[in-house]
Amino acid sequence: NFRFRSLAAMSSQLQALDTVYSADSVEWCPLPGFQHCLACGTYQLVDDTAAIEAAAAAGQPTEDVAKKRIGRLLLYVLEQPSGSRLALVEHFRLDCDAILDMKWRWMTDKAPCLAVSTAKGLLQFYHLQKKEGRYSLVLEEECRAADNALALSLDWNDRCAAGQARPPAVAVSDQNGAISLCCWGRGTPLRTWTAHTFPAWITAFDYHAVDVVYSGGDDCLLKGWDTRTDCSHPLFVSKRHTMGVCSVHSNPNKEFEFLSGSYDEIVFLWDSRNRKVPVCEVAAGGGVWRLSWHPTQKDTFLASCMHAGFRIFTCRDGSMEQVLEYTAHESLAYGGSWASPLVLKDLAAAADGKGGLGGWPLESRPEDGAALAATPDATAAPEQSVENELEGKADRRAAQLVATCSFYDHSLHLWQAQLG
Image (cartoon, rainbow, N blue to C red):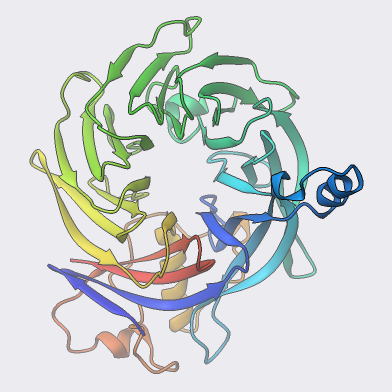
């Protein structure tokens, strides 16, 4: 068991899984009834055997043949069989093109939908289904989001009320520096524009004003775009970062607020009403590949700091402070995702003998709310209950499950963050 402490917070590793191929993206399903489902995407460079054989037959150098990008789409389900520890169990795997990013749709009255961006420039839509007790993902549609380029990142517009009043749309960034707006039911984007002169590592909606799309590129620029225009000119351009901008995330719980992160290891907190100067900044370390706001705690976010592991920060009173780090991964820290607090509430019910993590019928799902006061300690005996483990302890902490993945060690971790 790993345990790391920082200030009033601590983390405990619950599980480490080998994804075989290099893992770069991980996402918990946000929809009630399915929040125990976790998707993981992988990316692997391999020899293109057919192309090598063709080059050899033609008398051409085989060392010049480009490698092939392959991947796997993995689906795990959080389970806790009687007398056992909480664990992720693989329910489904699909060999596919290399995956660069993935996001679940936030609002739907149908089956949960996972959008995936691939090395062949495709935006793919998978639906989650359950049959005979096993969950799987079924490819329903795909859109050609990028021409002859990697589709590097994506974001849905329906995280908050502003987007839920609109038709669902997905923004995709690509290797050529372009941004595309795509939607369900169309094989080609609604529109595409050149946003950066180098790869556009990231794109994200302003969740409270979804006509606005942010982008960050390897040209070190952070930009905003008003999609009601032809996007020939950006809303703003920031040159505050000194290296490639890898991550942008709008705060779903606080209007006007968004984060940006970069290879320069700096995270900026921005107010969209004044984009000339950031509200504050913090040296996160390692190169910041992804940023993820906590689903319910409006001032807390997770940073995937490539060479420095995963770190949790809080934003208060015009400053940012690191409160926790998780460094059990042995390679580049790429993907990180917060589990819904509903998962922990169901874990507490399981510890009381009142339920389990097999999935909730939609008509009887638990109420949403704050994170559970505490969860089982990673060093506790399997049969020890939440209540027994905490009995007599005055220092109860807000607990949160987190899933993270790292690249070259092809590793997926489940861990518990106890935030003071």
